[in-house]
Amino acid sequence: MNLEPTPHQKITQHMIEIPAGKIFLRDEGTKRVWKVEVGAFRLAPHPVTRELYAAVLGQAPAGSAGPLTPVTEVSWNDAVRFCNLLSQAAGLTPCYSAGDDPDGQDVVCDWEADGYRLPSEAEWEYACRAGDSGVRYGELDEIAWHGGNSGGEVHDVATRTPNAWGLHDMIGNVWEWCWDVYDPAVYGPYRVFRGGGAHDGPRGCRASCRRKSHPTFRVDDLGFRLARSL
Image (cartoon, rainbow, N blue to C red; front, side):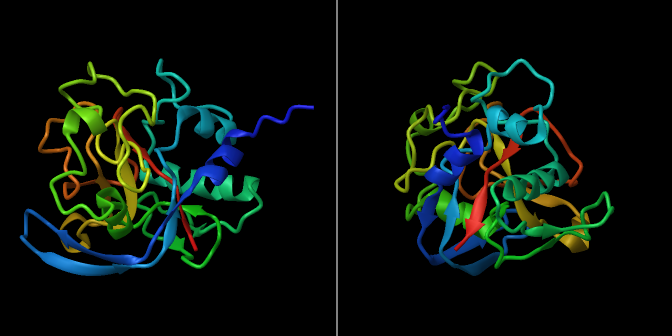
């Protein structure tokens, strides 16, 4: 009998409970600052790996990266679909309902469901900081794979120093999709991603750095991380 846990059992066993709190988000372009109250939730200790993605969908996007590297070349729409499929595989209630809009504007999130979902932008930055008010939660070379030490490629997850709450790769390695629309009045359906990637310099690898793209956008240093509501 094979008692080795499946990839989705592993992620369920290692989700980290994040306490409730508050965060001040800041947009550098508009200089707007806003406060968000964050309820307690669970967050995966590292981004979704190619191994986990393939275990749920049958295969990961084409590429030579190893099974324990973050999955990349996934759109926001892909990430939402993955969350629902993983929830179903784990016997949980999916968080998302959606139609056929390629812009993702018909996607609705049930925040009370017990399944997997993307973190909100406020949840992401709050968890990334883990109580630290600095530019990032540690020395860049120690906590992140970035443009200065990555050799131009993503690396296995959880091989850099985690933050105070045990979360790895919140800075560097890959950017991570969040739930939020960036600025619908200006950018329409564009969604937020956070955290910096393996190709980025120090400016991109900051807890407050916000970027955005269309929900169908895919690139080689953009992945996602799983969250669950409590």
